Image (cartoon, rainbow, N blue to C red; front, side, top):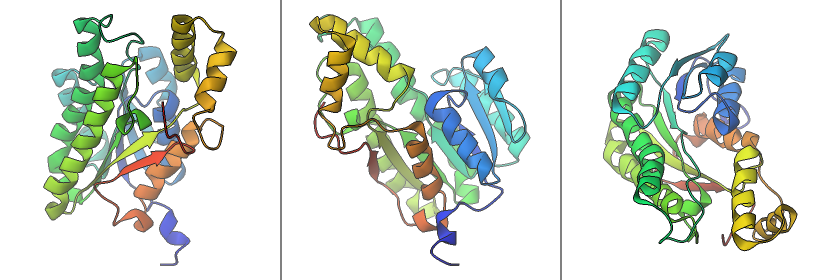
Length: 259
């Protein structure tokens, strides 16, 4: 196999992606379909899920933080795909923007439930199938999983936890031929980051435009990343060229050094 050919995933991969009906998840799903994969997605948004399903993409309406929903998701995915080669734990929420004393226990719990417990549940149900296929587990973390993030403590704590989960899975499942990695997106363009910037701007009493420039000023390249950049990393990790990458926290961020 040439080096160039090694950068494309093999055709026919069986891929499961949580929260795959929009944003980063949908972009990852579309990228895998371009390579000839069959993809099963989950999403809590029924309308978005219905719009995303079709062709090589099937789906299940599920809350990724709910154990019964996740069990049903994997059952339906296996019915459609017959096995799993790649499982991507993508589901997550931004959580509150506030000082730690203003964040309620319910807000903390919700953020950790969706972002960290959801990734654990995906790994819990994926293990046996990935051992069979010698596949891989990818957890979508954040640069907030390697940097301190003031006023976003539950989000940061959950994303550091996701990195720890991926690295620990790599050590645990490596002898079975299974790889696990975390991808750490930086500031990803789209409605979610617009909401985060708006919340921080309101908290500090500045305009959205001023706060946006403040965020970009923390990025070496002075630009946001695209969901396609995250999808491209997932595809690379699923190619022969990525076959020896495991236990890593891989930032796709344009050079974010502070938050």
